Image (tube, rainbow over all chains, first blue to last red; front, side):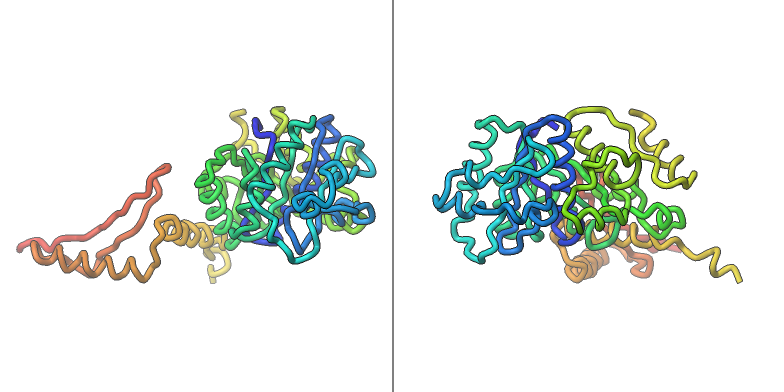
Length: 268
Length: 79
């Protein structure tokens, strides 16, 4: 992706925005990029615990906006990857300083200050929180689950991103269950692409390892010894963001789905 | 007997429902308003020729990036 500031968004809550931000951010950093992930879900911060960095939070995004600390002081260095940093959201309800201007200035300062990319974890919904998160972004990762409300909300979000002039918008289909797809009880990848009409950048299977890795605060994408599953899928998304042409994983051993995926992506 | 096998895949039903609901969402129209439009259109058309209201159908169709309004209205032919 050309965009250096990328918002991770979905409309609907609970589809995996924060998990995606943590895993893709960590993988990009492991691949050598200097990365900042920003949690903009003020009042409901979670990116810190998903990444296992909750014990290191001193200052947060709102502290930066209100001048209580310097931007450098709010950058929390990751435990595992040295070129990965987090800016936490504030847990207080006061959002008065959460403005688009503050957001844009902060992201610009990070990119001018030597970071290669900034991933902005958006809150659920389509209101001010989402708009503020999107205001500093040039590109977007839209996370969708293959089910009715998530797809409908994703369509709405895609429209709103377009209206903001964000054109580099890529789709991540998260929590796909190959067995349900195989028996016709879950939308296939090409169904979702046909309905939403944007470009795909990742297919992430439902995977127990994600819950286990968030339990211990250690992004699954960092474990390069695992060759399949959600962690690998997130790592592949990071590689595609960097411009690499990575083949899509064959999900499970189901021949039907594998053939389907190969048919879909055989062209590139 | 063939119930289980001829059961329509649930994902196909979902796909149809999503396409329909998204066409309304994208056009900023509610299904109720669409019904109003449908009956008003029928009134106008009936002034000019006898129309068979029974098979009358209107829908919004996505064609690439464009949304198309499609009305399908069989005309009663003179015997």
